[in-house]
Image: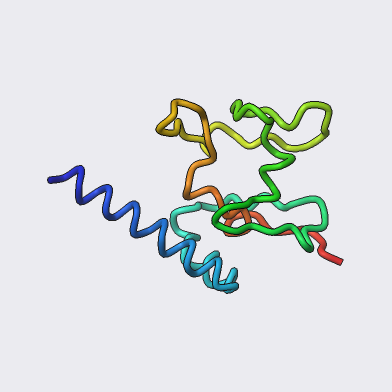
Length: 115
């Protein structure tokens, strides 16, 4: 019973984050998750215009995670900040994948300059 309630609460929270963020209201999403995210808001050091994040595609992951889903590795041959271990979970297939609550990077991370 406790596991079902916890799972329902987690899934509800994730769904709420995605619906707010994907609706284009990033400011509301940041406010909504500020309490759970803590004081860390790492700035994105490059322009993010045109870098799409949808439920099926995340252009951040294309550079900030390697092709094999290894934790803490940027794409081979690229300079870039690796995604830390707490951004990953083991998927049903046994491979590491980006944690659902970490999928929308711009909820916690914001560009330093988007000019």
